[in-house]
Amino acid sequence: DVKVTQSSRYLVKRTGEKVFLECVQDMDHENMFWYRQDPGLGLRLIYFSYDVKMKEKGDIPEGYSVSREKKERFSLILESASTNQTSMYLCASSLTGMGGYTFGSGTRLTVV
Amino acid sequence: GQNIDQPTEMTATEGAIVQINCTYQTSGFNGLFWYQQHAGEAPTFLSYNVLDGLEEKGRFSSFLSRSKGYSYLLLKELQMKDSASYLCAVHSSGGYNKLIFGAGTRLAVHP
Image (cartoon, rainbow over all chains, first blue to last red; front, side):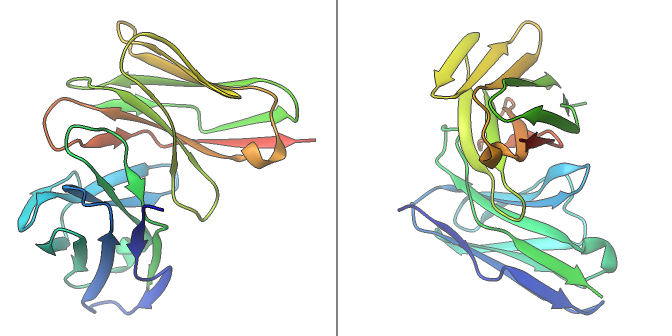
């Protein structure tokens, strides 16, 4: 069964901490994405990657960075966590040229 | 700008039929997706339309009109387990397969 795995379901971090969210896929997909999901706003794209070491900004990249050192792993980094980054974070992957995303189960991050 | 609109909430009765509408304005169009998301879970793929018309898959059907920038998801013989959020997403032009999502429609099915 194909999978996208996010390392944590729930995280609580303090303001100012550096936070790492990890995502691993086992489908050999080229594309990987990080979204955040907030009530009434839907899924908003933070960053995506179309190849190892390649990254592109999405719609709301401020306060975030990403790393893709291996094809199967895409990490989201909150450089200095703030309370307005409290959200559900969803990782997804897809093949190039084919639309369907496979999503991870999400990480609910609370910044206090 | 790019915009995808869908109703925020809908309610329906078990066994009935419900239609969830989605309108979009995007800089390009390469296909439209519907996803289902139960509370606290990841979205799961329901349907994909790239050409005009109706795609049927069991109890679920999805319709697309590209000239009108309009799609709907039709759910028949509603079951309690269909209570979930339904996300409309458009693959706009450009590479890398980016999807633009609507805010989602929360459907409550009651007995």
